[in-house]
Length: 104
Ligand SMILES: [Cu+2]
Image 1 (tube, rainbow, N blue to C red):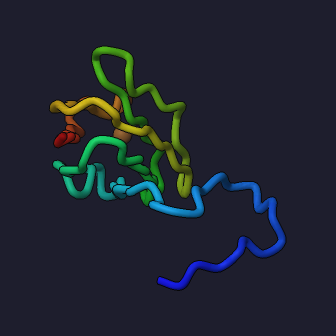
Image 2: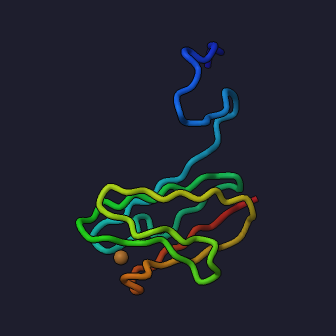
Image 3: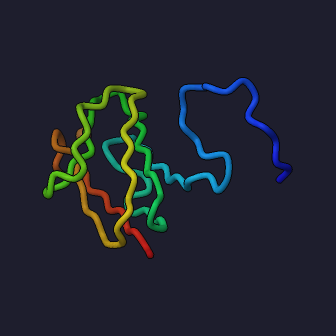
């Protein structure tokens, strides 16, 4: 990838010019997290996007993940820095379960 100066400067989103942070994406649709299990290396920002017509949340029991109610099209993101396995659910529909596996 050629190295180019940042055009214009402030774009609102803080993205490092080199070594862009990895991102993982989880869709929320049909009352399920998709994929239900996502595996990412430590330091990855996982972004959930609600693609349902119903509101959902991303919530874990430990309080680490605590999104507001996500309406259609809303997103929630969290950067996982510690390896481990993180289970979460939708607090509105507790049968909706998901897991983030963070590898070193
Ligand atoms: Cu839900």
